[in-house]
Image 1 (tube, rainbow, N blue to C red):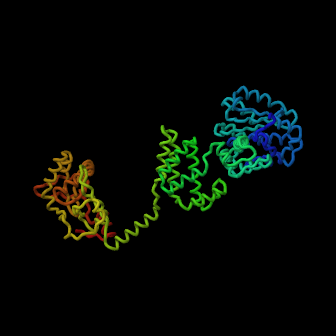
Image 2: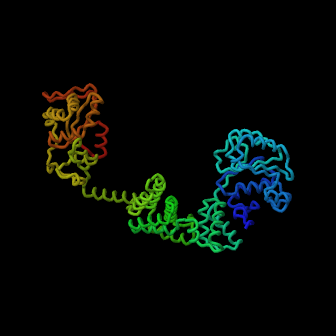
Image 3: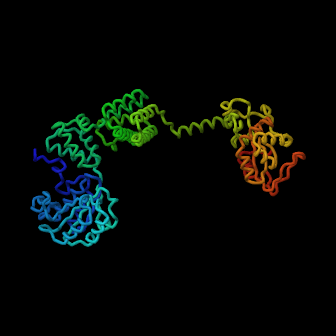
Amino acid sequence: MSDYIVTARKWRPMKFDDVAAQHHVTTTLRNAVAQGRLAHAYLFSGPRGVGKTTTARLLAKVVNCLHPVDNNPDNECEVCKEITDGRSFDVLEIDGASNRGVEEIRNLRESVRYGPARGKYKVYIIDEVHMLTKEAFNALLKTLEEPPSHALFIFATTEIHKVPATILSRCQRFDFRRISIDEIVTNLKGIASVEGLLIDDDALILIAKKGDGSLRDAQSIFDQVVALCGKQITQEQILQALHIVGQELYFRFTDLIKAKDTSGGLALVDEIMNRGYDIKEFLSGLIEHLRNILVATTTGSTSLIETSEVYRKRYTEEAKTFSPANLLRLIRLAIETDANIRWSAQPRFKLEADMIQMISMADAQDVGNLLQRLDEMKKKLDEVGVTTVAPMRSATAGQSPYVAPTVDSAARNPSPINDGKPAAFARSVPVQSPMSRQNPPLSEDEVRSRWSEFINEVRRQRISLGSVLESSTLVGASGGAIRIGCANEFQASSIKRNKDLLAEIIHKIFNTPARLEVETTPGAQSVDIAKGTDPPAKGAPPEDQHPVIKALMSELGAEPI
């Protein structure tokens, strides 16, 4: 029992070729050893369990090995055995977390002066170097920049951003990458084969995913599973041992979405809670599941999906029933649920509500198809001579029952339509001839004759607005619009802010819908109601020269009236 060694230690790589997924690092180091171009300091950074310390030990071995083979340590000489057993005086491994002070670095500087006992180099491996204090880093700078020829520093860290730039500039940096699921599966499969274990690919994929890019973590989980299951290991046993949410649960959820079965969604949440699954872990797996369907839908392939061949075929079938737009909406909602669930006082209720929303969500419409349908409808309306009119709004407080028509309809029909029917009916009506309108067209003579009555009504409802109108100038009235001139921007803005109320009063006084158009004319005088004349605006261009009117005449064939 005492001779048992965990898999991570028992199967630690003994040469550079055995280091998984870090060929860009090991190849460079082997070439440096072969060419005699060793640096005096190296910095290895990357996630946990990807081979940083293992590679540092291999480098320490190969530079001191008495009989290296193809730039790899032979692991047979006395120096290699001492380093492997951790009893070499020439290789010192220092834990940066527990030896982080300036005093420890001063002691290291003193020991650097002395040469190696048996090998060619004295190697200092400082793990978690980012834990050193600022003072300790500063004490290390000079020694690190100009160390003795027999000294070799190798630093390892999982948080490269915490290492000062002054240290980085004195080291050769190597970034170790996360190990892929396929590479972890290959490694575990080789170990299981040598140790006589029967384990299927689905089980190995579960272990590799649980390792999350760390080979050491995956090997630790592998030991746990072997301790529970023995020599024969199946996927179901691993799901039970590691309490992992199985893929079948996620496929059941997408089946509920296809069937729009909200009651089944509540039952599924109840099952998740009764089995004791972690809600965050379930949502993380659900996001990955939806992502896999999206990949299969958009690419038509399952090569980018990390799962067994059985489930890849199922993802191919699922891709036939989901559109990318719907999948993107589901993924977005699942991500929002995952982000907000931790702050919820009732995470179960939050999960139930969001799952029901995902199940009952209506299918997304393709914007391209909608635009095409709109174009087809517009063409049909143009063929039959039908134009669209802006919907009429109900006459409520502060609102006008009249909405100005679009440029197209205004050009064809200067006087807006108001047949007294509800707003919902007035959304699209054919253009009527002038004889068929119920309301007479707006007359400038009538406006001038009843202008004082209009101002009095405005004053009765809003005194300040009536005073502003009284100091303004009546310019004219035509085409469903009453044009007035204001002496300054303050008066103009006051009138524009109350255009809905003014339109309502205009409809009440003149018995026809019309809008109020404001022109800012400095020095404008109040209209003389008795004479019914207005002073002309000085310097104003003729109406037919206005840019908007010119555009209407050239583009839409408008004619002056």
